[in-house]
Structure formats: structure tokens, C-alpha cells
Image 1 (cartoon, one colour):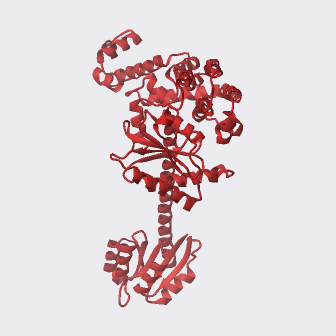
Image 2 (image 1 turned 120 degrees about the horizontal axis):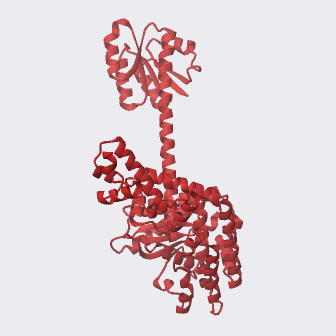
Length: 535
């Protein structure tokens, strides 16, 4: 609702308007009255005024002075003037002072209502535009947060896009880090204070903690934060060019203290050694989770630094037997391409190899991480919601139980694979149709750019071989053949309906070499582009 201020030294004028105009129908909430410029300014300082209607001729200070002051202090307030026929010169000055309308005295109620109604509609339209702008801005920011979190999860789980794709996404998502930057990884496990809370409330508190971290830690050093795939927060903090360990410690302590003071959160922060972005993220994340899970650091300590010895806790025999987990094709790629039996064989082979070794929780937790990484990744990219039963051991307390023995871990791994296979098989058809549609949209939008199978696979978060299999099985046409066919159809149209040169068409379709383009065109249509045009 809108508030209006009526200003006239003849109080009967404002009183009459206040009593006779149907303000509620005009969507006016409050009507304020003043009989001088000074009183009007006092009311404007005390109340939210949206429209000012003022007489021009008043003793002491006139209405033009009021308009000037309103324009200076409250530029968004709409103003209108009351004027007599002989004061038209003043009305012209008022218009130059951005008065939206002027009304002749004596005031005609119908004309007055029409003018005020127009002003109210204009104000509400501006408010609507502002609301839409704020909504779009908020939606854009929310979408950026989701995109940043998705990319961060991919990098932490070892799914790196190509270098050019990564640079594009970092720039589009407004992330200040670049490949090759030295960073420290900060891992903040889910606070005990959040146990038992509703998911939405816990997320809100974690978001608030990330905002506190941004205020305390960022400064001139970019900080990229998001939810860790296995719960908690992950932050990538660009390393200082010179040694600032003491200052870093003080900032981290300040962050923890502020989270405790303002959010009542008891936080622990695990700090990695300096790593190179993005190559070292996946390995550092696995080590960070392992160290946080089994750390023997005293509980009263809140900030824990990973040292080189924490990265070499495994004996050489253990390293040899665990190596198949990370040898291509990785577990994620096997699950992504639906090779469930091969995935089971990979896991079974690793678990069987460990049977003869003296194991600790740490080695079992390494296998647990590999499987849970795949579980989180597949759920994230195929739209599955991880409920309590599906997530299995993603809760840190359940994970301790699962990794308590090799038999429990083996049973959990096989159950997880069975559940994932069931979920994928029940949604594979609609999922595949959606992928084909998405691929065709990407090709249509990027004919003149990079539309290689690898580029498209990166865009839809699938392995190129698996994407090609899906596309061929769904359409009967190879993906590479489809890309060439669409380009050739576009070339045919351009040759037939435009006068563009062959080299211009070549460039527009994303080819570098006109001779190569002509060769493809002849293979497709049995004649060269020039022969087609000369027919």
C-alpha cells in the first residue's frame, strides 16, 4: 500500500481532500497533512511517504523549495503540485523539478483521483519491477550456488572436466580460483550441534557458517566453499604468497570462535597441506576424510593440520592391494556405463586381496570411501535422492560400524551396488531420452563451435564411450555421424539460400579447413559445395 502527504497552507484544502477522496479504492494506506514546508519535511523524516502533493504558493517557503528538497533527499518519491491558472510559470518550474503532474485549483475531485491513481499505478509497477529484479537476482545467485557446489563435488570426487571446460565453468560460476593456483583445503565435519535438527535448519546453519568464513578468511585471498559430498563443509582457500601460518591460525580460530558465539556451533577444522588446484583435490579430499574420521588429536583441539606422515600411513603391501580401486576404468566410470558385474569384480578383488593382511580401520575406510564416492556421484548426476536407507554408511557414525570389519564392509558394498543397479534400471529409459534430447540441443546451439563427442560428454556429465552407446541405442545413429549430418544439412541450406563464400560457410560450421569441409560435403551428398551451387 502507498502513503501520501498533502501540503497546503490553507488547511481546509487538505482537510477536504482527506475526507472526500476514496483513498482505500486508490490503494492509499495513510494520508498525512502538513500546512508548511518545514512540517512536511518533518513528516517525511518520520514516515515512509511515496507521493507528495503540494501547493506552490505558501508563506515563508514555497512548494518549489519543498520539491527541490524532496528531489535531493528522496529521489524515488513521486511529486505533484496544486496550482492556480495564474501560476502556470511556477508549474513549469515544478515539472523541471520532476513533478509528475500538476492539478489546477480549485481542485476537481475526479481530476485529482485520476492523477493520484496514475501515480499509484506507476509506483506499484516500479515495485513490481524491483520485486522481479530481486527475485531474478536471488534466483541467479541460488543457481550459481548450486552450480558451484556441483562443480566442487565433481572435482572432489575425481571427475575433472577438460581444462577449457573447467576454465569456462569457473568464469561463468564466478569462482576466483584458476588451474595451477596453490590452495589449502579446509574440511569442516558436520557439527555435533546439528544432530537431530531438521535438514533445512541444519543447511541454513551451515550456510551461515560458510558466510562467517567468507567474512573472516577471504580478504584478498579467494575462498570457495560448498557442502562436502559426504556431509560437512569444504573450503578451498588460496594460499598466501608468503608464510602467514601464524596469521592463518588466528583467522581460523576467529572463524571457529564466531561460529560458536553467533551460531552456537562447535566446529572442528581440518587443514590440508598446500595442494595445486584442481589436480590434488580428489586425493586430498580422501585423505582429509580419513584423517578426520580416525584422528587421534585431543578433542579439545579445534584446528587440525594434516602433516606429510598422514599421507603415508599405509604400508607398501596395502598400497599395492588398494591400487586397483583407482586404476582406470574407475569405479565411477564402471557404474556410469552400467558395467555392474565388472564393478563387483573390481571391489571383490580388492576385498579378497585384503583378507590375508593385518588390517586397520583406515584401510577399510579407504574402500568405504571409494564406494560412497561413487554412490554420491551417481545420485548427484542422475537425480536420485539419498534417503537414510540408500545412503547406508554416509552418516559418520554408521561408517564407523561398517568399517569395523571386512565382512561388514563387503556386505555393505554389495548391497549398495544392488540398490544402485535397481535405481538405474528403473529410470534408464526416461533418463536416456532426456540425454538424447539434451545432446541434440547442445549440437543445435553450438554448430559453429566445439561439438566434439568429448565436449558434449563433458556437458552432460557422462563418459564419451557411454554417451555414444546411449545415443546409438536410442536413435540408431552414431553420435559423430549425427553431428556431421546436422552440419551438412546446415551447409546445404546456406549454399542454397545465401550468397556466402565457401570459406565463410566453413568457418560458420566450425571447420578450420575449406578443403576438409568440401571433402565431407562430397562424401555426404556426392558432389562438392561448388558443384552443388553451380547446378
